[in-house]
Amino acid sequence: MERVKKFVEALEKENIDAALICNVEYSSRPTTMYLSGFTGSFSFLVITKDSQFIVTDSRYFEQAKQQTKFTLVEHRGSNIYDTVVGVLETIKPKVVGLEFSRISHDMYLKLSEKYQALYKPIDHIIEQMRMIKEPQEVEFIRKAIQISEEALLKVLPLVKEGVAEKDIAAELEYQMKLLGADGIAFETIVITGPRTALPHGRASERRLRMNEPVLFDFGAKFNGYCADITRTFYFGKPDEEFVKVYNTVFEAQSLALEKGSGRMTGKELDSVARTHISSCGFGEYFGHGLGHGLGLEVHEAPRVNQSNESILPVGAVVTIEPGIYIEGKFGVRIEEDVVVHEDHLERLTHLERKLQMF
Image (tube, rainbow, N blue to C red; front, side, top):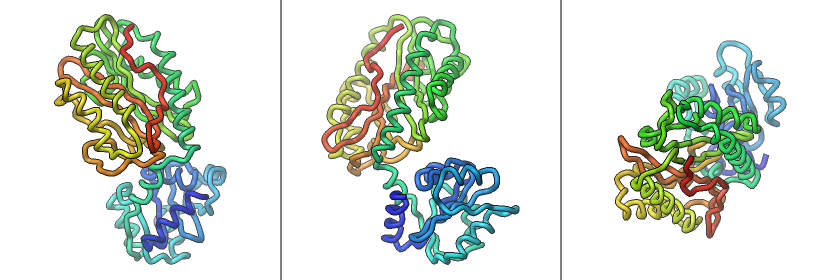
């Protein structure tokens, strides 16, 4: 309950009497899991200094009993808001914190109509807490990465001419689950040929051909925590242009991994890789940020991009993923997951980064 204690202390500093975390069809599942341990898709948390409640229905009541130490309130009836308001009325908070970025306007209206209070945003409080990982969280991410890497190594021998992107992706997801993943962090991306120029392309029926690249962007989940890894391979013999682009991305990432630390802003670290890519003549082909935070969600704070002028916090886990995408030809991206330390970045990923050919 140490997280709840820290959370309540942060609420008190902003004069918020209670927090209401609304998890409806996974809308606030990461926050719910982070604070209470509950992993179901339907619940409301009510958190104050002196009490912590979880409201859920019969589908998840037994699960909640097993997963959380919060006081359980079982919802019966047709209107969940009546049950939640009943809990609020027992503690009578005047100021209630909500994750406004995770609830609909309709949900806010229903809550505010049924319970009169001043509602204030608490997204920033939760973001700041989740950004800095506890040692156990890092170990869960490390395990998710290990599962992901082992799965890819099992799948690579199956990558042959004529195999469809969708089939490779399905096998990779199957292997991750077989190795102990409790899910996948996001829809597995396997794209080939000119489709590798799509930064977030989806696996399709397209079949791999000789002398073209294949890009994997994938990640397992372990105890709710995500891995996020990208590797670009070449099937056949690459031409000089592809090798030059690949080496540029590799060098840019190497510089970021070498120079990155908890003394830099997200913008400064992004600039390390971006400057190198631009100096090699490919600046216009690197359109996204260098990386992002990683944890219970595959994309979370802090951002490693041109707009983040905040120092990267020690203890954060972030991705380092430069890429070059030339429309109609090919794309190259390499992605590592790292822990931010005061004077360096610790790599959690261990797959080979240099160009590999089949």
